[in-house]
Length: 365
Image (cartoon, rainbow, N blue to C red; front, side, top):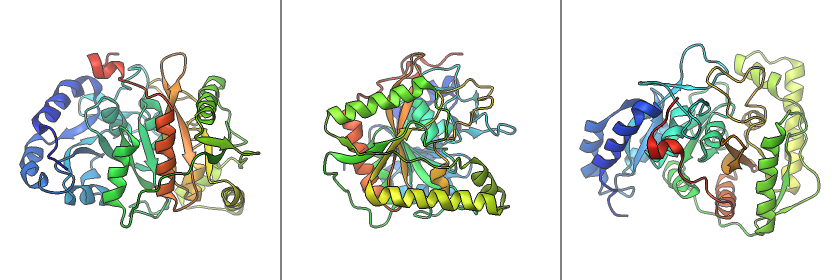
């Protein structure tokens, strides 16, 4: 691999765009330029990347990328105080904007990571996903997002719900992340068509009709392209919200424990016969900066934090108001390489989102 393009140009792009986009908590131009000569001689050859939040540079993934020659250029925004379900990031210049619709949130909690990748400022950024915190901003910013199998990579989350992940411009960039972060990673090329099932709601979520239609349309294109073959039946689960909250709080009672156990039984039975589950990433489109109201944007994602399955978000298209929507791909536990291979096939068959307005002219409110 040759040395990465001019790091000065990367840093200049961030300096120009971030006062409007507000994706970064901090930027490290001097450190990045100082690291580059030594990094250029390593496998990643000075690949610039961003890290999630104030502690991101200390994360296992960031340290592995640095050891392979990646160069961290800054830390990205996460939700500020008092934003439990508003899920917008608070960067050094203020509230992080969605590059496609600045009046909407980029999602969270990996808000700045998704926005920075979507705006083309970095090719990949680290994230973590405890309820959908990688997949939701990936979907709402029109980039690729991967939550790894719970426990596959070190995580500081004592509840076991949060797993390391990556926001990336493509599955190829995400594979760069896995290759150097995950010991023993080996690429898996899928045999097409992939047997899959589609569920717009997992049996309980109130998915907006237009969001469901975007995901369903993406699945139809995948069928037409020979990427997937839908099998009979979907995957209905019990609403995991109360169980997730109980695990997070550390106070799990029998009703919540039984919901979790029953969903695990259903998912084990599903993946024993079908290797790929497809759903919308969220039941809703990106909401305004004051929050989603009574809607849980996590409704279709947090079941897989409880169960531990790897899950990804691939851009699926747009709703009528110009907001990106994502298609969620879920695979059996430990099948992260197979999931990434499947996501690559899906990515090649679906049209890319192109450049967001914010990347071209800078975001506005």
